[in-house]
Length: 483
Image (cartoon, rainbow, N blue to C red; front, side):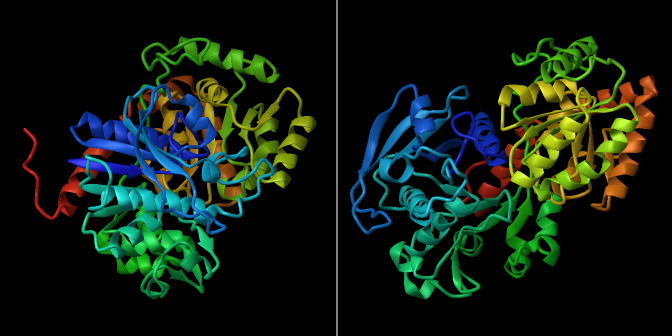
């Protein structure tokens, strides 16, 4: 079985969030079970810089930029660092060679031609999955991800191709919405701009296009698949999603258990495992030193790694922070996001030096050390399609406190591998924090929960097998069962 996996980011090449982690790990896991999965990604500067060897396999001369002028684009074949997964890189400098991030400039403003940039990615994905592909290798399935590749199923279906397409929703809140005049600029037929198509409240939505035209929709956890069919988390798409519930499923993400392995993590000052936990104490001490926290071995250290946004529950954490500190706790923040929340976190650090630390920005290596050095991990997201940090935390013996939503609900067992609260309020979070602090004082009971979380299997194998079964169901003619 051949699968083309189209994505706008993939670790370790380029990362802004969990989509990159999934796009780096899932294709590799699929290849391990015999699926020839290949990744398609834009040639951002960070991607081009990290490629070790490339060869051109196609050239495109018929695509236009935002000004209606032909743009130079070529397709390079390379491989993902580490996993070796075959990688198709869409090298179109006028579209992707930018000085900022994948989606926004250095000031955090969306690029004004994002519709054209990611329509180009979607058009190439559809072309490679269709009969007119310039490649000898042909996919049996096109697997798209989030709004940035949401137009690919539309281009594919509107061209008359019968290649099955899957779209995975990593976060329904990001929908790729653009003005209606963009439709003709992106080489889409006028008849597609309707409620039975790509139209969304008078605008064009890339995500709506994917949800409507894909053969199957997946989300990144079973609970999130149910939640997005309801008004609260449906983000205006709940009607379409509910109408497609028979073509909608939730497959829980895994984590890269090689990258996130406390017994062999090069980012840590000392490795450890569920059977040999002494190294975790060293990690905590070194983290306190690194962040300027008081080196108190018995102080419960709370970690939080997240985009500093309302969605991630930073407001809730700030509301209970004084209570944590009053009970002798420490807090280590890592992340970036809304300036008002960044300022509030910075003010908290200034108010409680030695007890609260924050690094505004993102640092992959430090994120490993916070997971390893913290005792408790805060993840009170208002909604969370899957979440990865709660799984990293359990693997690293840091007990997560989570709001019962999406993948957090599906992965953390209250009182067994962490602490779950059910209302997104400061009071409910504080009650969970108190339960954690009370148990932290009971060392044998705390160790039992740590080891229970560390023993959980969050590898990608189970998820890969679920995707394999889904792909097989979508094929027009069944492939022979593997030996």
